[in-house]
Length: 87
Figure 1: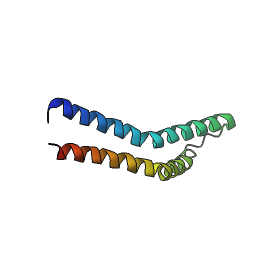
Figure 2 (figure 1 turned 90 degrees about the vertical axis):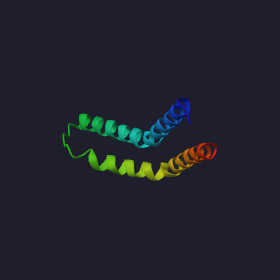
Figure 3 (figure 1 turned 180 degrees about the vertical axis):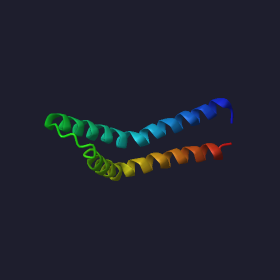
Figure 4 (figure 1 turned 120 degrees about the vertical axis):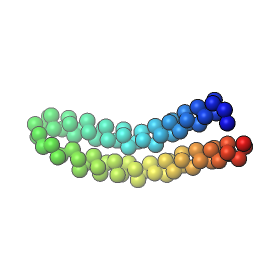
């Protein structure tokens, strides 16, 4: 395995990491902004208000996106296994 192939595998792994993390991070961002806007509009300055909805939203998003994440990881593993077998 030469340097170009190692860089290719590393780039694919980083892109896969971004794809796996993006749904949960985007949901957390949207819920956080929504709750922050709600707190600003209603002047409720409770520091713990943001945690329960954000945890619940991330949990639901992980349940919804888990099949996609599994498919992405499975296809990446098949690609890596094919590269190993091709050596």
